[in-house]
Every structure is written in structure tokens, then in C-alpha cells.
Image 1 (cartoon, one colour):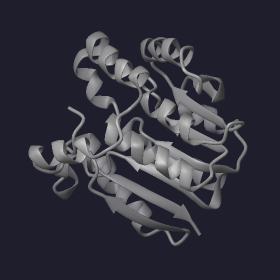
Image 2 (tube, helix red, strand yellow):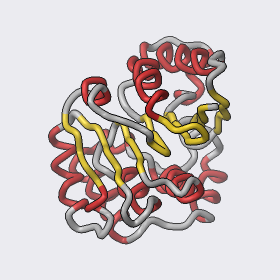
Image 3 (tube, helix red, strand yellow):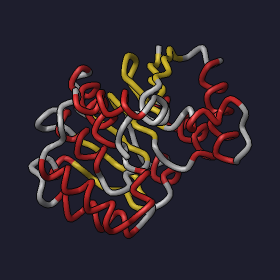
Length: 214
């Protein structure tokens, strides 16, 4: 489940084997999400993407991080571990069941104290926040990606990063048929033609776009 979905399974497994494994607590979180939420566990970022997020946070010497779409908190804890000891991570989530599960693990993690959960529609939360943020991770409802992007770009410091997940939709953006595929294809084109940023799109998991404000 947590391999690179856009590459052959054997290559994905090889990449996973050559990626630093999550802590025992995070491995338990992955397993608990699978047990309690079943097929919805596919929404997890997984170990490879989680380590990428953490390394990006470390490389940026990030002190303030914003996450849109926490789910059960795997990516949240990976990011929290990568930021400064006195850093702050604000995460937005609308699903009460996912929030309750995440809180159980945040309470057991030494990095949980860095995390503030904002429950409710993210667009409403974003109107209340002040920048700058060093890193923003967008992994929420796809039709709102452009709205999220436009809301967080002014909050992200120059030279920081906005990381957008699921930008390739398993290749569905090539010939979009579903609402989510059309939304992601539109988002990709929107960012591609935005002179305010530099971008690179990676074929990690379901596609990740790194966006840096100029």
C-alpha cells in the first residue's frame, strides 16, 4: 500500500526498503489507521512521502509549517519531527473520526506538543492565519486545490515550499474523466503558468509538486 504507486511494484518495494523506516509509534499509526478506517487508509502519505516531507522540513530549517488535510496524522508527525524544537505546526482537518485517532497518537509522541489542530473547513481557517510559513503541505479535497494554493501562497515565505500531493492522480491527469482528475489537471496548469513561483513535479506516490515562491 505504501510503495510508489506510479512505478512497478518491485521498484516501489525496493525504494521503500531503501528509505528510513518510520518510528515504531508511526508504524503503529499506519496499522491502526488500516484497521479502524479500512480502505480510507489509502489516504495516508506513507513512509516514502513522509520521509520526503521530513527531509524537506529539515533542509529548510523550518520553524513554522502549515498542513491542509491531516487525516490521521502520519504526515503531521513526520513533519513535526523535522521542524525546530520550538517550532509550530498548524494542521487543518474536517473529519472528527480522523482527528480523534490522530490525537491519540499525538499525545504519545514527543513531537505532539508542536502540533495545533484546526478543526473545520480549511478555507475558513486560512483566513484567520498569519504568515510567514516555511513549508505548506496541501493534501485535502481536490476541487479546492487552486483555492488552497491562492490562500497559502501569500502566507509562504520567499524561498519556502508549498508541497501539493496527488497531482498526477495515478496518471488520470493525462485524460481527466473524474471530478478529482479534472480538478488536479486544472491545478497543475494553474501553477505551471504562475510567474510568482518555481515548480518541480515528482513521480513519488501519486505525484507531488514542489512549489517555491520567488
